[in-house]
Length: 254
Image (cartoon, rainbow, N blue to C red; front, top):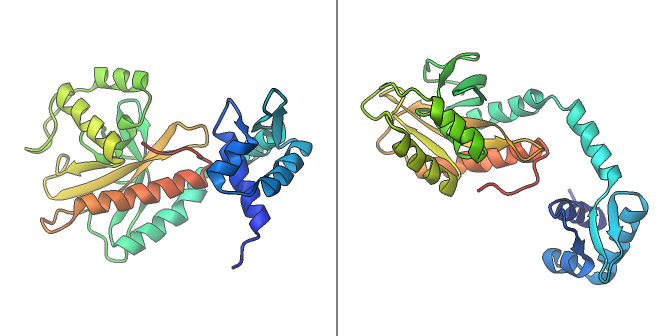
């Protein structure tokens, strides 16, 4: 399908303007998006006239996101059934990878499984929709924790009661804090047989339109020494970023 270049540039400009609360100049827009100045000027002038962007007429005009764009965003958020958005994507991901896909959210200091999608020939997993597991030994929990704000993370770490699930379970706050630093650097978390000896899981955070962690997705399968879990982590992080975008998140992860 051929995309309309003006419409594409308009969306790119809106996304760029929305990320900068201090505003961005016309020169800044052109430099960042590699758009000719005459084309960019026509688009932002039209957007300003329609209330999609605001114009701060200082020494150099700066553009910020407008009230009309905010209203459209609010309407989208109010009408959004995020589970309805996620479920078909999770099913497709399970088919593509041949692994079980979970979506989970934080419930106090645990992770609760909200969605589960299985491939055609699934491996039996103990986690079911509605069940809970500790955050410190699941890829879902670690992904959510790592990308939560510092105060939330501190409160949760203060409440964790470490219990040994396998020989590989993390058993102290210092080791968990180091693990979460690693998760933030990589963009994904591993459950390296920490919850169940025979299972290995890879998870990554999903963000909502407000920029906060909404939950996380994971791939689960039987542990295989030959599996490249780092490559799998990148795959999951990429799909989680796509889901975040579908839910209205405009920022960068990490």
